Length: 252
Image 1 (cartoon, one colour):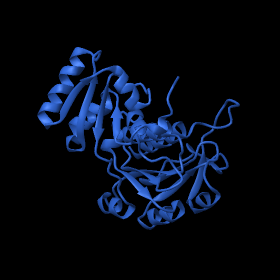
Image 2 (cartoon, helix red, strand yellow):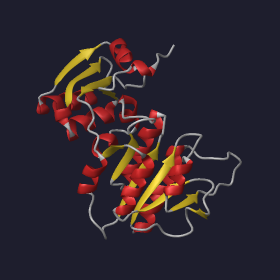
Image 3 (cartoon, helix red, strand yellow):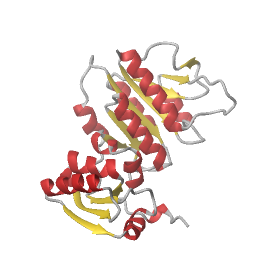
Image 4 (cartoon, helix red, strand yellow):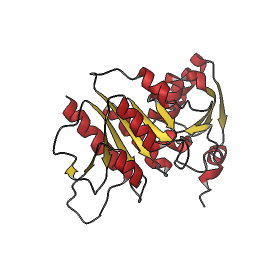
């Protein structure tokens, strides 16, 4: 029986790619690595070399230890203890974003609840060339080991900012010259009708509920993704991915 993931420490990440990304990109945040006895030899050799290079302690353990640490997630025989993930604040992030007219795309999450969705969103955001992902301080999912694993380590490479009120954050972004596009089925125009402005923020809503009414009103416009089937709506991470790669296409 699967254990409740709520018991999993937020200071644990697991899986080959996230752990190796941690060791390669931000080794100062890694405090210890544990590996199961059935890890493939070439993976064990690579991780051991990274640990020794970074001065990080590593230990061989039984798979049952990894199961307990990760709540029986698919840990691939490897996990790492890490210092808390850095979360930017909005003003700090605005200070490092390239100024206009440089093309910049940001994703703002309106209370996404599922850590797998948030991880997938961050992974797609990095792949699409986003400059940052912004998440609420309260009422939504915060980065955990599950988020990091699902993001394939992208959450360690892409700035993730923690913000207060989402509507006020929309106004802050508008003041910095961004065009804010909310993704909503009630939008007047399709996502693909016209190219995105060079400096665009996409706002994606929570699973099932979508954008809150106040956030929707704060956006410069709402756009929808046309669908042929009868499903009714797309997963939040899928909708965000389509929008971000549409910006990537139109920004070229």
